[in-house]
Length: 463
View 1 (cartoon, helix red, strand yellow):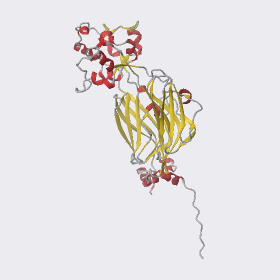
View 2 (cartoon, helix red, strand yellow; view 1 turned 30 degrees about the vertical axis):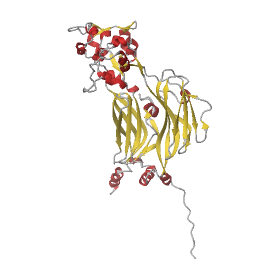
View 3 (cartoon, helix red, strand yellow; view 1 turned 60 degrees about the vertical axis):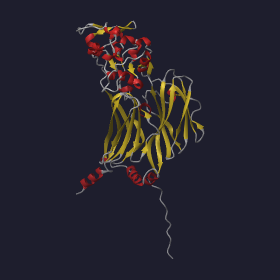
View 4 (cartoon, one colour; view 1 turned 90 degrees about the vertical axis):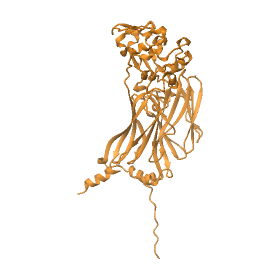
């Protein structure tokens, strides 16, 4: 009688475990509309999807602030948009910044004409109050209290409301994202409730609180060919088959809040790419404000026209800044916002009133508010190879990536993101503040042992 041999199944290998679930970096965010009323309480809920377990490893936040405030020019400021003179604007607004409100640009610029052309129709004082606004300086000292609760276990994650600065760090993004003492698992379809109590007066905007981590996707979400590819990528690569590499996407920001731009980051066939961190930066356009003095001849407001100089004026002759009409300033500067350069403020604002400046050197006096460190946008990443978003909603750049001036550690991905040859990562950007070229960089390395590079290496090793 033949002897039966018992077969003992070996423990699952790392590749088999990867086949059962695919790991991707993932961020869950909650958003809160702040109105600048201390004591006001708002809350939001993070819903973990049914496609896998979410493991939170760190927490961070950012504030998409609305810095525009009304100028309150009054009814006597009615007239053509271009004939509004600097003397009609509050002096402190010229120090902080003045811009055309994006929501009411159609009142200032003629959209039927190419480029940014001023309208020739007069505006009432009420309309001017809508179209022009003062821009508050950027502040990074947002303060609020918050509590978190896990609905799956019913447990609060603090014994009492925590102060943002004490538990999350500064709001300007100049900090590493706070790592959790231990990774926390949230089961599919579970929720995290976050409650925020405002503490700052007159701070309006959208607050983002983000849980960083990764998702363990079920096998039904990850196709079998992708599972096999992930299995191969989990094995350590030969040291001679690793090349440090960055994939960069360029996004042209036009300075139009709400505008959406998409870019695709394709991975070459040379080898698989492993992304370990993300960074970004804005290369703004020239901040100088061109002053076209030839526009003085086009002033149609009688009270202003009779006070302007007629004929040639010496470059060094003093010019009363109260008479300088906005039509003389570059149109892009009016959209971005402009201000008197801080170095010249003591010179031209003596006693709280605008003074004079050399007629031929007015180009030196102003600068735009379009600074690289003030860029604000929302972004979303989508892995087309797996067909999965890498966050539950578009994230604010400070909340998801850190400060815009580069004084922060690059956002680390936990775990690293694996992208196969010919895969594509789709980047979506929604503008808020900033104009210029946005560089969005994935830092990591290429694996030449997976993809076309592996074939070339094998051929090279043949005798």
